[in-house]
Length: 302
Image (cartoon, rainbow, N blue to C red):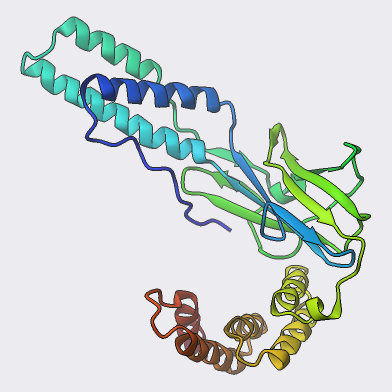
């Protein structure tokens, strides 16, 4: 799965003179220190950095790969080049001396970074299979838990990471951890992710929580990621029986029907979700773009 990812804004282009020099050099020096990291690994647990789960609640870890340094390098190299172009203009106008210009060019170019594309994984060893989990309990003891990537989202075996790349994989399990507090991070080769915190409660899911919209969707997600569409459909159908005005529920079931290529049923659910959205959020400035796109897509399949 490869999509665009947001990047930090460049240093403001209207900065000038000594201030511009300082900003450019500070950013470039910072990037030089960070450039030892070839790529970035992100980790979430149940879609957050800090989660509390019941004893029998499934756990979903989401691992993302990106290369924000390539984007920063390219943008800030461009900013540095703008500064050099301004110096050249001033040199041509006689506003600065050749010696000063030459010294600045040498100094700035010495700190400009090469924009490198990093490739992780291969057909024989997909990147998602290279992820190693480090799970520590509150005593700092490592817990043995070997997780393999779930079926969805599907992602290429080889992650080609440039400034616009973003890859994602899910890992999940029926809870195999005892009650307690855990700190979790993941590793690929010599790079390590952020840490997430997970608390496992001593009690199982109460009925009123199990029948909540959020928990039913969570179970549906888990089984969908495992490529167990029939099981996911059971949870979504139960959700809609309890919450017949759930736009999210109809959207989710529309997705499942689309996976099964049941286009008529999928379209009916997407249109129901759209009607509910418009009714519940009549003054919304944001259109439900996903629903609108899927409705057009499904119509094209009929």
